[in-house]
Image (cartoon, rainbow, N blue to C red; front, side, top):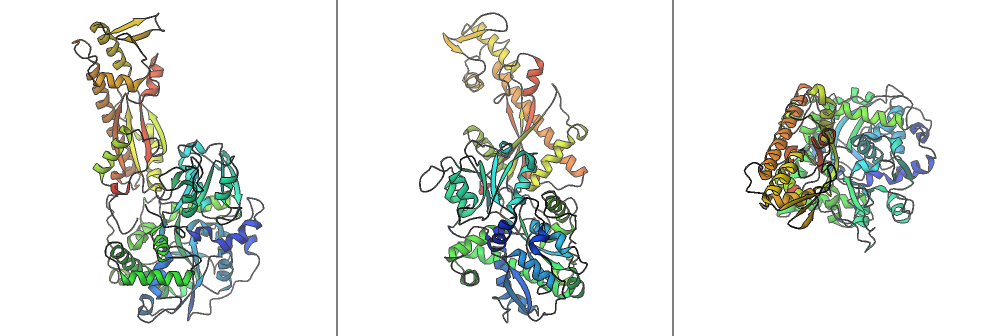
Length: 617
């Protein structure tokens, strides 16, 4: 993924002006969001022509600009043709948004889902202002957790110190990362910063100044400044931090930060047709913007260039210095479109859908002290089968296609393994063990692990999961020793339990598995009829592959039995055989069983392994 320089920064995630207020006020982690908003009366929405609609600094809002034709609805624009009359208003100050929403200055709130969770107790305290989530706009692909080189996977965060801006959506991203690693907030130490970027009290600057900080959440420009790139490590030159690397990004954790619109319940009930037109118009704009963007990237598009220019004018050149920065801002988000909204609000078994996301958002809000009570939002009650959508939109295919090219994924996993870069591209890994000769993996025995895999696959929508079967090397080692001894090339010395070996006069360490595998593959121990370590090793590889495939089959069956969605192209079985033993030379059966395992690895893969798609759902 290529990132332009200044703006691919998810400024709205930071909502600089909101959190300039929020951060210094929150002296403690358990500051209630209601205290930030302060007291105020609930007013009715009286100004409806034009109707005020907030926007924030994010690529998804560029589709809103396109639909409206500018800050005011233009004749001939998508919203104009829908009969709407809107005035778009800057809403990066989310606290002020909530005040205006409560007062009736606008019936809409614009932010991320978890920001709505933080405000849920405020907006849910009066029946008139209870929130109806009317639109899912995008998923983020431009937020990053940067770490020191000593951290290799997200499991290594246990006991570590992490810096992030107080109150921003990176709070939700950290929550997702911790859940994925089966850690809790008590397992890490959080250092809160006032600002997200551009000051000495921001995560990136603290990372540079304080070596005790192990990891920080950043937006793209700061990530580039610390590491030099999404898939590179900082060298210490040109302002980078030596060894700093992206531990995980929403480029892989693609269903962590989602952007939404919420509408007041009283306004929604009285103006459902208007709300429907607004949502349908936005989704129409997404269709057209996506097509224009594709054209721009291949042959150029004057209309898309006009959208970039319009966005630069609205946000200002301080925020969007160049048109390429505007293009980068748009490219950092993944639109969900009509299919995504249908899936998000109505699809059963969607672990990234409205209800699971709401549970997560409210758990976070109450658990971290932003709210005392769980006050839920209402899901969109829109009729997606109505002519307002089905006869108006063109990209309405609800058939979820496989996300990855399975063969390309398998090839990449093999290349990562053979090239020695598997660990570098591992985000998370965990294992299950099995008994000798075990061929079945039931939900009764492994249901908890299967559930974790399904949830992980949903969160990490742009990563793949390798199901890697491992075998114990004991039988191969025995055959190697016996074959080598009979051939006269291997000498054994010492006493039982403390043997040492030499191969043709040179010491041979039976715990150096990689060296032994190369010797076996090179034919060093071939030629002895009774003992054939090459065949034994191949049999172990075949068995490990079969076990991986068996586990995958059981996993798919488990997901189906629970009514959960899982993309089979995202989860690929791999046989490892004896190449990566947990214990290279077991001395008893209990030790040997530790090698009998199936490992789940969440891996970064190149964009070429994924199938192109307009919408993420």
